[in-house]
Image (cartoon, rainbow, N blue to C red; front, side):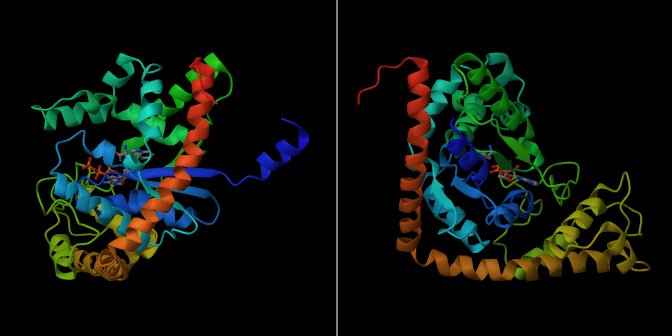
Length: 341
Ligand code: ATP
Ligand code: LTN
């Protein structure tokens, strides 16, 4: 690098990459752990956000539903406040370079590493009749997503930390073998809200693929539904609203309330001093339902305009493909693949 290049690269905005699978109804866990933070980062970084449909097929999907959810997930990104003019928003399967780099990186990932992934172990248990190779190599495709765009930062929830560390290890391994090729990415995991728990069983992560409808609150759930689910949320037999060990249910509700209001746990404890769990649960429900209302309305309007969503997908795929092609070409040159000009 000459000095001009060095200056340019120092001034270059850092790149962010992240994605959500269109594998179910997105929950407030996805919102608090990931999407909400993406919107906060869009002015300071070059941001690339993907609907990772190829990851979603590691679990059996109904094709018509997968297609609908792909549009819906993109519409949620925009409705949550991601500006398609400022960010690259696209669908993973529209950029075949993801599959190409995934193959290359798979040859730099060890069987033992993939065997240790807790998400693989969890999902193998839940889908015992379909423990396919895609489920096993899922983290390699995720590493390809991130490394293709030379991402500096990856905003995700806590459950993705292990996958992110693997992506870093793969990048370092490749760089050590072939010289500087990939940016080694850092995670961006929020301090509050990194792991929102199930409302039905607060020892479990809230997950969009949970079969119990009362376990999770969907970003798009109706107003009354949200309030009802919070009222039914499992808590302990204490009556005081305070954040403490052993009060997983209340701790979770306080975390959700804090994320939607910006209030600290201390402020929340003061606000509900002398009041019971019932009042607190109603307040959390109303706050979440009110906060998500504008998002829901914008989402409904966007879903009526498929052509607009397809324009965004097309533009996103073109921009993403251009960046991805540069990385693939560099990797293939380093690997020794014969390249035609
Ligand atoms: P699935 O149930 O289909 O595995 P999921 O709800 O875990 O899905 P993903 O698509 O795997 O959702 O995750 C999208 C993003 O949301 C990731 O960054 C993930 O870390 C984050 N996320 C998911 N669930 C939570 C949660 N309960 N709390 C905080 N962040 C979460
Ligand atoms: N594995 C993630 C989704 C995902 C992702 C990514 C997140 C796929 N590719 C790249 C960040 C960066 C999940 O299951 N939540």
